[in-house]
Image (cartoon, rainbow over all chains, first blue to last red; front, top):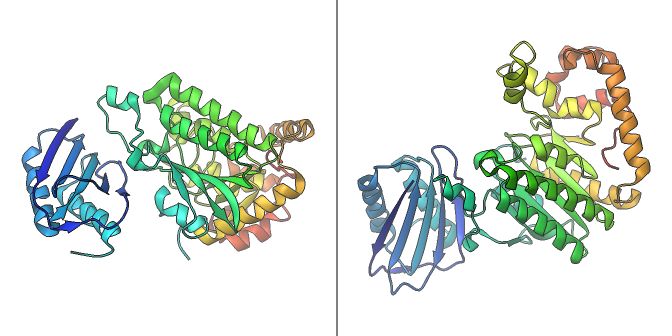
Length: 104
Length: 302
């Protein structure tokens, strides 16, 4: 297992709703928990993954995600069991859309 | 119509319970995860693979749970089991109208060894405590992972088991039997054999499940509402007489079918005119056929 932490400062989009969980921790899949949190305008992401050695890939996928959503005061926690980058991106969008009600 | 089979546990809850009524205990944001999996450096899930809480079903206060088959096959670890037990105990203390368990589990989570075994036995005891309090317990089995091992036993502690044809209910799963007794005894890759042996139709014909429905969330919901009403009518508590009747039924089954090598043989002995046609029948046509050929009133713990 590896744990990765990401923090993006000065987002512009607060989360309107309560915590939401999407996805399942199964092979090639992941669960994403997204919840509002007082983080001084930042978005924090914690990834716990069973796939070791993909830190750079996670960083790229998370940077893309933050560029799309610009979340502020949001905490995202991920339990991953080897999901591909495309699946991770889709799940992240699904998680945030389940809170905001639609695409960015 | 919406497939029950295709949904995850978290999607099933709002389809089965009255809309927007379910309140989850220990939701994912509480992060009560398995301490054992972390020690083994294995991935955890924020809900440990089970959703527990209370909602309304047909307007009545009904407690419930849904196991997520996608996470470790729905297997029961210490936290997972404790969530089920806590919910069942709270159902008693808050005088629930009923408890509905949407089960999908391979049984004990072997990673957690004795803690998982104890958890499953505590679930069974808690289910019987709920029934002893006069509160019906209804189980639904219709997920891709079936309901096996300790949770297969737990399912049969309920007043009523509702299954779809796609659902499977048994003690040892196909691979376990093949590993223990050889491929000549049971070929776990023979999917038709697996479903003939453990699937909803066979369980219904033998009396191990009391209701068979199509793979449809609305059908499961309607069956659960009906089963709860029926259990209130007949009394939810497990009685000695019911237990003795169950033992008699099992003795009859062993006597009548103990030497059968395939469920097809059992169906033939039950008088089903064309056993080979049974797996292809839709739920309605199957129920019409089964009405005259089911083995005795195998009413589970009723």
